[in-house]
Length: 172
Image 1 (cartoon, one colour):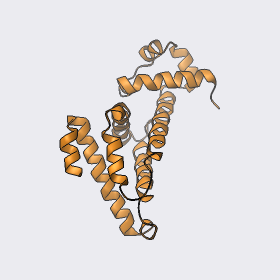
Image 2 (cartoon, rainbow, N blue to C red):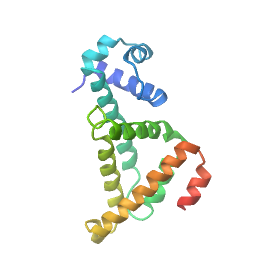
Image 3 (spheres, rainbow, N blue to C red):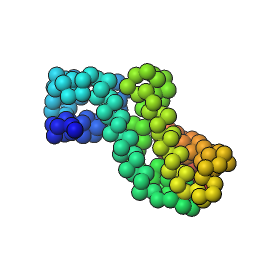
Image 4 (tube, one colour):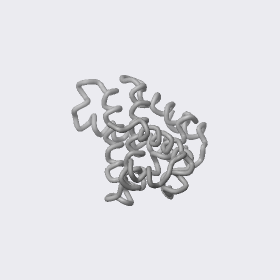
């Protein structure tokens, strides 16, 4: 179990990377911004990679908690899009996109497995919205995969352009 100080610094670092991103994060400026030192961060997280892994786990926990509120049954794709397109979620989703892409480019680094894990998370959310008799069929998996691909493509477009109206109309 993490110490209170570790939790406090992880939360502060998480707020920092939501604003500044993870790609070029350097321990010295991060430590200064969150009221710590590189030495303390290295002691608590073991390495910069350890801190990045902890931050990715924190972001994923945030995403899963928010997705848990989406519910199940008909209309889940619409509710997911409403959640994805909400301006309040932009920092988390921008961080998610950065981590997703990095996990594809650097599959052995601290990002390892992030993209695959998030695909599996989202497929499970979509699975819960399907009728029970379809969930465990190849057709059910194909439908979930299509819905996920559509949502992820729309999300990329939205993050790139900020055009909620156009992208939402394409999904509707």
